[in-house]
Image 1 (cartoon, rainbow, N blue to C red):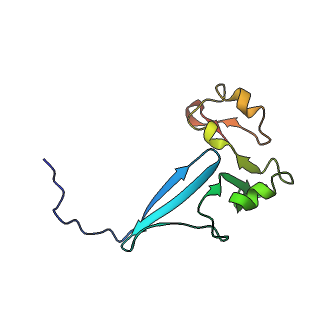
Image 2: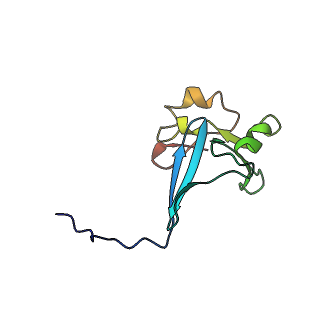
Image 3: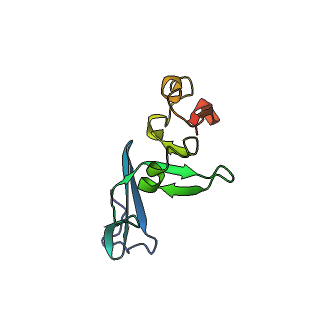
Amino acid sequence: MNNMPANPTPSAEPLIGIDLGTTNSLVAYCDAKGPRILLSPEGQAMLPSVVRLSSVDGRAQAIGSAARQTAVQYPQETIHSVKRLMGRSVKDVAEDAGRLPYQVVEGEHNTARV
């Protein structure tokens, strides 16, 4: 039997959904006004699944197209193709990791981590 009220009250907190793709990603949210896709500052809905991290503090310095455009300048700080590593062990991703310019290490439960 369904215990949900007939007319549930909308949550004040927005719901966020992320479609994390190997090549591109999309983020959307839904609040009282309805669902909407988040756009990049350039107005793009689909963003390259790339992020450039600071070598000093690990914070994101660029995302999407901006990160991809500077990947040659910052190869070790630019993270891409990470979906291929998710949920797998370092041993399982050894071949893929050997082609990546950034370091892949063993994390909790023997999973590959960046």
